[in-house]
Length: 361
Image (cartoon, rainbow, N blue to C red; front, side, top):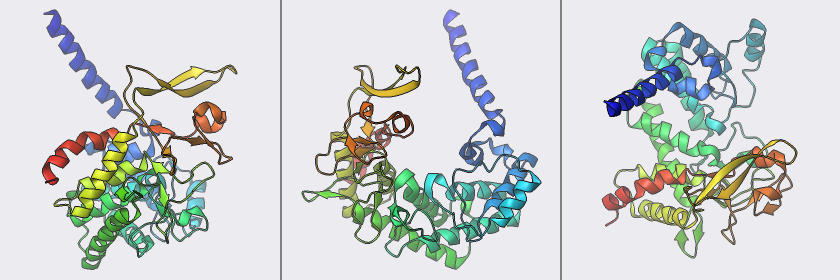
């Protein structure tokens, strides 16, 4: 009886926890969780339609959306007028999930309401994606192009991987995007996906003749690892490489080149894990909440976001662009304001044995 009560309590807590999360007001959620993580019945509701009006308003004339914008929060008439005047602004971007997230939300809305405006906006977003792609298959961070590191092929924050996943869903006629039936759009989408796949292989860092992983961004002309912000130096990336490997591992009947790329990437990640490592939050001598990386025999494994291209050792950096070995060597602001370490490679490492058994002969 005691065991039964415990089990019942666990089930109740699980259901209650999920229900509480589902009932969380949208103004207390992130935009991404509202865009694609709400209960299915919410899409098409009066509240969702109000959000969709904001998303349509924010769509730039060229077809994309700006990033880091809380599209789901209410707007005053003054704010709406200001946004309307900014529709020609050249800040449409692929970073931080921008554009692909808004397209997925509007696709969900069209599926529930059949409102043609949503379909038109998604197709406009798709044309923007196709127009922004380089002939070599990569995408810049912004389009139209902005001077600086923004023109590099952008793997950063999974921008390239998100775009390819969306194109693949369109090409595979997945239900969410089945309304895209225009022959030219479909033909161009297939070509864009293929080119986007090819550039992943062309940019993979080769060491002693063997493929490894990728940098967060690569030069759009030479395909070599490229620098972005002052503290985002050229590197092997322990974070951005994961999304690219996921794309390659999802391909049916992969070519020998793709198989070799996946094997090389997985082996590199496996060899560069930081074992028994975790984040530790503490109060520093100034009384501020701070964080550090510690070794803990009970902890799992982590990876650095950046590894030196020559030594293959992890590093961090402050806004001065000087490489340091430990978080304690950089300032408080960057130490606590950036994702220096990650456990995301675990996803592909767990999938790899099954993938290898299926495709590696």
